[in-house]
View 1: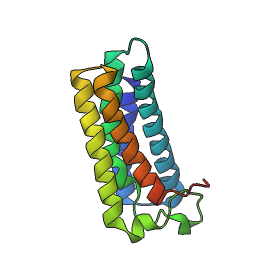
View 2: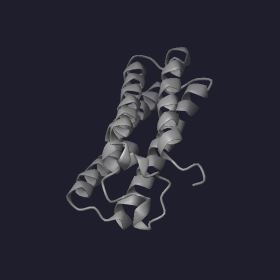
View 3: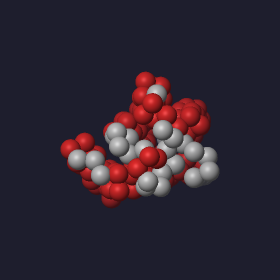
View 4: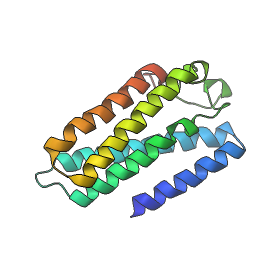
Length: 151
């Protein structure tokens, strides 16, 4: 439940970012949101590796992951790139190639939605592991293109 409240807080903070973008605020928030998404995904994976996965934890974690994945494009407003002087691992290509970036973000959201839908029906690792791999592949595709590996 605490994770869901945190996700709601993140969604509210994303709305505020649209109104006024200060890179000294927006970039650390984006980094925190990405870390939250990573921890959430890891939590789902860890549950699926357990000898007896907690179906509720898998369901809630997958739903939170899907919610976060749908927000990803909003975490990259104009004026929050590496040219701001604020340390960020994001490559400028996020803004110079927005069509591809948004396509990759949409692929992530779609894969996360599929995982959440699967987890709503089952906690069987045999059912969910292929969906987890799709999410991981979508994360990797975006990171390979838009994240500096040395950060």
